[in-house]
Length: 151
Image (cartoon, rainbow, N blue to C red; front, side):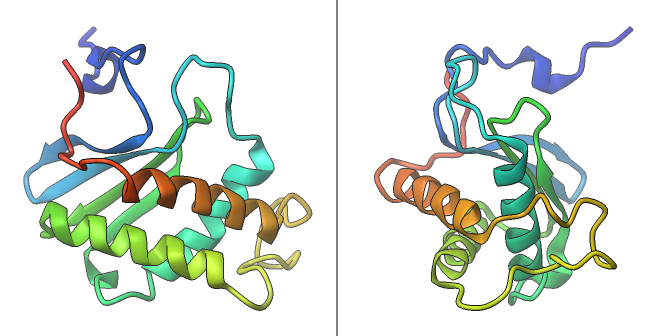
């Protein structure tokens, strides 16, 4: 059995940031790492779910919406995957930061928070999404984002 590429990254060296996880033709998978792996500080399901609803809605309504393939949480509860087509890293970083800012500034109802819109609608909280987005935006603003995993 072939080992998948993401298992080849030394997770004990990963820190919060944005990384290119893989490139498949014109599709790039970004690792939006919001937490340090294996450090005991994980997102709870409500936080992941809430960020997913808000981020996915905003980015799919952005100037790059046609280039977004997928956004969703990592099962390890330390970040999210963003798959894009035909975008350069600087554009992705810019739109990720803009999306986080929109979540933080959001004034209104949580996106997709009605029973008919979500299979676990009661497990959403806008304040959780805002707090996690603020935390991650602070990381992206204060580091050199070279998109490379540490060796």
